[in-house]
Amino acid sequence: MLVATSLGCASFVQSLYGAQAAPKRPNIVFVMTDDHAAQAISCYGSKVNHTPNLDRIAEQGMRMDNVFATNAICTPSRATILTGKYSHLNGVPTFNRFDGSQQTVSKLLQAAGYYTAMVGKWHLGSDPTGFDYWNILPGQGVYENPVLYDKDGSEQYPGYATDVITDIAIDVLEKRPKDKPFFMMCHHKAPHREWTPNEKYREIFRKKHIPEPDNLYDDYKGRTDAIREQKQSVFRDMTRRDLKLVPPPALQGQELNRWLQTKPTEVEIEIDGVKKTLTGKELDSWKYQRYMQDYLACVQSVDDNVGRLMDWIDNNGLRENTIFIYTSDQGFFLGEHGMYDKRFMYEEALRMPFLVRWTGTIRPGSVSKAIGINCDFAPTFLDVAGQPVPADMQGRSMASIWKGRTPRNWRSAMYYRYYHDPGDHNTRAHYGIRTQTHKLIYFWKKDQWELYDLTRDPREMNNIYSDPKAQKIVAQLKKQLYALKKELKDEDQYADEQPTASSYVQAPPRKKK
Image (cartoon, rainbow, N blue to C red):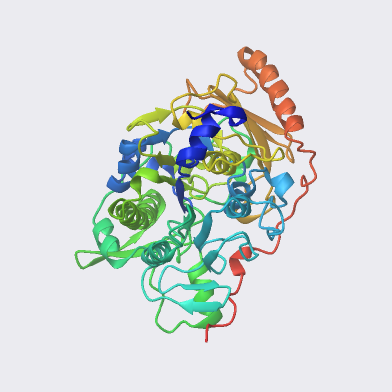
């Protein structure tokens, strides 16, 4: 007769038949592009393009509609994703060099037994830490025949950057240790400026006419000085390089660069063998088409390669236990308010696309309106890996939202802060709060405010800050704003932050032997 004695029933059974196997920890594939606007993804309602592979993630998983960058610029967003902290705590408010000695999600997952890998655009000025494998673009990198470097040196890879980065990511996964779960960060350069497509999509999109947003010709009436002073206008600030104009053949060196950096006020084109000089409104419309044709062509290559990576996961029996995520480091203006680029707290720049598939856990085709921020990414990765979330991370795990159970105490508002003033595109420094229904923005160096009712005015065309009828909500939002600012320990240490040496110019190390 068998007696359980002091082992207890469960322990006794395990002693006879072996310890019960722990739940298998999921792999995590995190694909991130640079400057991909949600409004250029068809599952988000795009009117300008179709992205079947990105749509596939949403169909098989969840589309999150309200995930936002806390500082909508490339380098700060990447630092926040790694640390789970706002810019004022991770030391990267602008293009500051990232201190790789600090705590990151890759280090924590690596210590927990995950195989960690980083491929593609890093853009943090320092080399990656906490990764078993890394191979990155120097600074911004290039689209054609890119150079990437790892701990052993640099190497030039023939081909188009989006294809090359995917090739390397797949090769790393094929060669990974099979006895560990993996955490793969696959970061693309595209569709960042200067929006260089591959030849296939360049030709296809040159033949397309892209619908214009209804506020392309925004006159900024009633807004603060900040939007009038910005230098990211499709009409005023795109250069000959941006527009892919062909320089005179004799130009070289500095003369060539000056020519390419000029912002043209007239352009000569040829239609059916007839030359025509464009100026004024006709030129403005042409500039928008050129910009969007190239941008969307870059996005199409991204969509193809996301499909390739998903197919590899599925075809290698990894789908059931792999969380597959697609996002971008922030949003981007596609002509809304007459702009390109990002930085402003307006919806198009603030919103990050966020699509996630977790087979068997996330209900296919689900949609979440919960407010997420990029500080949430690191806590989420740790949570799904069964690891504790450090108390100093400022985000929360989104895992329960993915499972269809948004916590009752989930955030009802998010805090934003942008520092780079004066800086690229002359975008004025500001901070603010976004709720489900309103947005309050403070351009602190100019002491000017904007308030938008996102329910009635989702395009953010009518600043109601000075409207007598809005004063109650102004007072409520200011109270919330300052409470959030205090809770997040934002003590204005970077309030006078000036532009720093940009990590865009980071040079690769010596070539591999």
